Image (tube, rainbow, N blue to C red; front, side, top):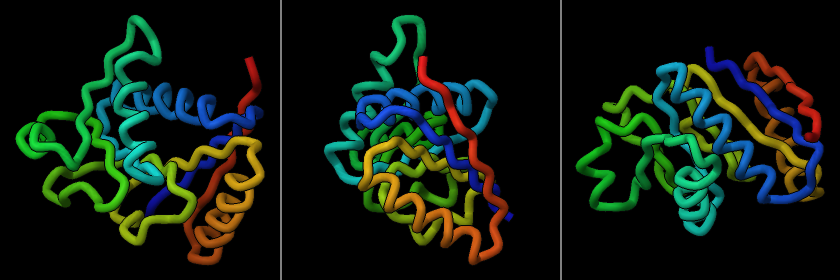
Length: 150
């Protein structure tokens, strides 16, 4: 059964949320897992694409946007994909989903792990509370991780 982890940030900004998403993506990829970053929309997906190149000067997270021609050719070789409308191909055997959309994608249960990132922005709090309740009602194991500022 899919394990769901909520990471609760003390910050209110989208930038803090996306920066943490990049750090978490690096950690997941470094552990040898394939990851899909599910963005709210194309603009967020492109912002994540840019940030994965620049979030840390000494970091590199191999990734591709799913909507690009290059991604279609590199899909099987890149450990991290980014999308907003459709899931990665089941053939890719992606183990983890980092969901940055306000709602839960219908196809979330095919992943071993799902991560949700919450910041203190009211819209995000409201949406992710509903996600928490939905996961719990469906019987999924859910954990919260309170992160400190710094």
